[in-house]
Length: 332
Image (cartoon, rainbow, N blue to C red; front, side):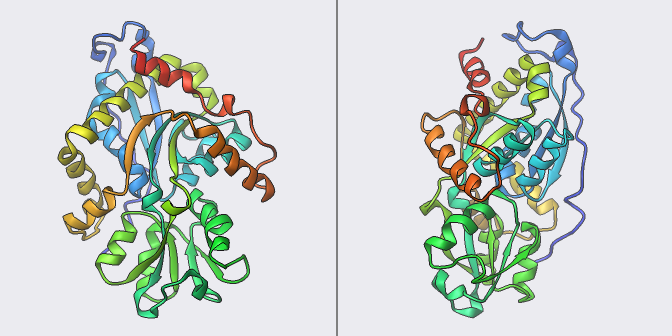
């Protein structure tokens, strides 16, 4: 396996459009909105690939929007950029959204996908370990502060007999973990796709526990309160583009797969199409707002409050801004 290290720096993708690019049915979007540029954050793992596809699909340009692209290894880094008002929108799971709302008033404008099946604790194959409890005293690579990292350390590992102090947490970005596993500098990793599928396919590691058993992990598109206040029409147009993306994932999966597969191969990953298919098959893309989110988010908020990672349980009517998606889906 070959991994290039130059692919995760900030890049800028500007899709030149003008007011004339607005399609029929968008009379409610003022001409000034046609020049709105969205500073779009996304993670370079499988969670961020629906957003990557959105930016490459042309649907934003058709709706008169531009994007400036900020790529990072993990969504919690996008959240931090948004709290600092360096980025306008980005995807991450519930725990990061709650922390971002607590620290910077960030809001969710849609649930984009569910990715519980993409997260796993992977152990080096040569160790022959099949149970989480056998990792006591071992080195576990984790992107500290990420949603998946929080869920594993705070919930999954304790449920399987490990508590903090029983293992050595090695902090690193998810894109560096395969190399660490190969070099045997860590014994296991808390990681997501496509890295888990690559690790298994290359005989480096074995999945011993999957996150889906504990958490379906909805991933949200979050926005800064500043952006949604200044550009509400652009937010609705943006979500309409997401509904176009949803249709492609359902009706034209090969088109989607080809675009996303090219992203990883362009970064130097030698990944067989079937390995990639395994990774993508663990992602469900369905932009919207399911009805059961408040109990789910409340549970995570209680854990984060106990861990002193947030200051209070939030008002979820302020966290989950369903009004924009309602307008996008209604066509108004």
